Length: 126
Image (cartoon, rainbow, N blue to C red; front, side, top):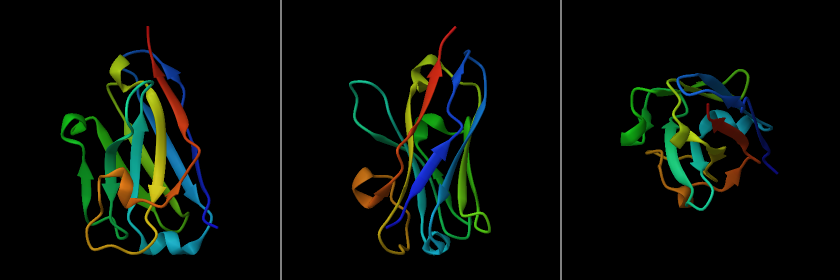
């Protein structure tokens, strides 16, 4: 059973930065796309960023380009999300996810992922 554990969430002021981490329990992580998603209270879960197994392809939700950066360290089986210039509307539970099989193109949709972490809370307020 694949386990994904997110850390790094916190309460920050607007304009602040955070680095979220997600560590996988199994080596199959190295052959899989990884994705970051978020879900605000009362809203649907939405895609934030995805990264291919060798980090060659990274994709972002259009509204978040320029502020969020996804990266991964396969030796540590960890994917990161650097979030800068945080805004109150970034407040959400942030989840990492992994699909059940290798993919040519990493999907940004929730349905493309089989394994999910428990989430880490990011709260942005003054």
